[in-house]
Length: 185
Image (cartoon, rainbow, N blue to C red; front, side):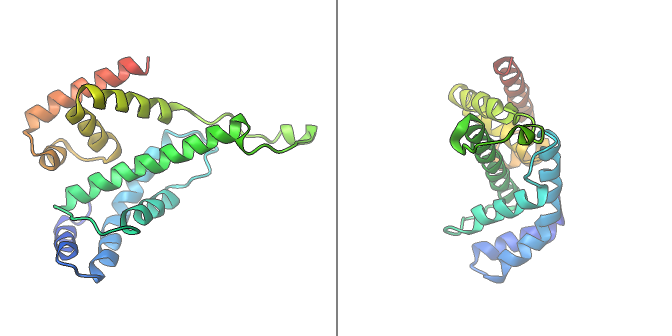
């Protein structure tokens, strides 16, 4: 992760109500969140208009626009950021699918047809549906998958966030991956 001592101090500052801590936390965590966003965007379709920088900015807006959260530690911050990143990508995928089905209908000429982008990937929507089903069967395994896949947390970091042992996390991770693979066909 990013400068962990600096981020931990800033998370503590946020808990204690330090208003400057938000801006400092953004500077300290930005590079890591941008790296994670870039990782997720690689699995999106090539003509995707959402860029990693815009994804990170949207995540920050969603995290800090409402009531301040009670941060436990740096891993908790990244877990919340990962969940928000997933939601942004899902909202974007749903909006793209709605447009494709005529939600944003426009009349096109024959010349316009050649410039249309390929169909949006529904991979993320299918993954979200599989995660929701996993959550119904095993909520902790669903959290493990979300933290590891979307949050980019290591096994020990994710175990710390969830308050479980690394061995338990590994079992949940293997179960979650197998469940999702089966759901996604």
